[in-house]
Length: 184
Image (tube, rainbow, N blue to C red; front, side, top):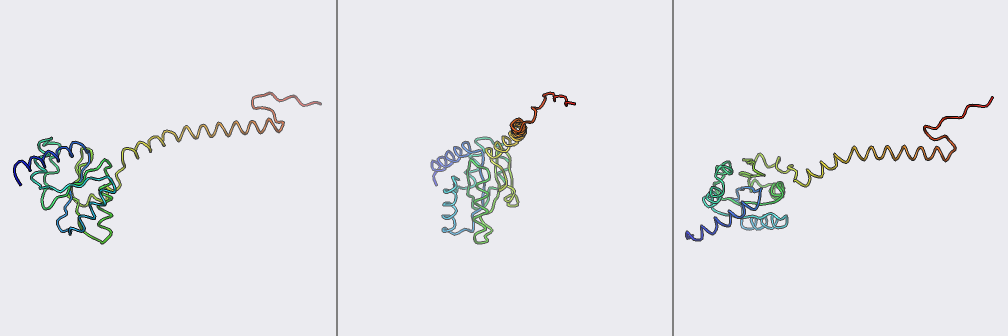
């Protein structure tokens, strides 16, 4: 690979690292060509971009962007590396888990994940990463929690109003109205 080609790869990677807040560093060393193609298809179907590059070029791209921010990722840059870029932080973890579960494989192995500024290293974090909630899911939960008390108050008021209306129709006095004294 010429110096010019290497620089092109570095620029492409810098663009991807800048574009996405989430990326996974995986080890695909023992996968067959057929398995890698299947993994790429699974990524494509879930809007996850997969790139394979040399570890030195990945490191240079990360260092040129922010060497401190990505420092936790450098130790995972060994063996054959495939990068998975995604807007949804847990989608690559779901793809890896599903792919490995189909034929009880050990690869692709998670070497590191960079999720919104946090670094998770090691394959033991894969299960936890499948449970990360997306920004949209968290916002939905907060909105649901905020709406819940208001819905209960409205339901209680509606129920109270319906109860009063049923009482008036049946000839019962309205709430708050004084009762007539009994005739002797």
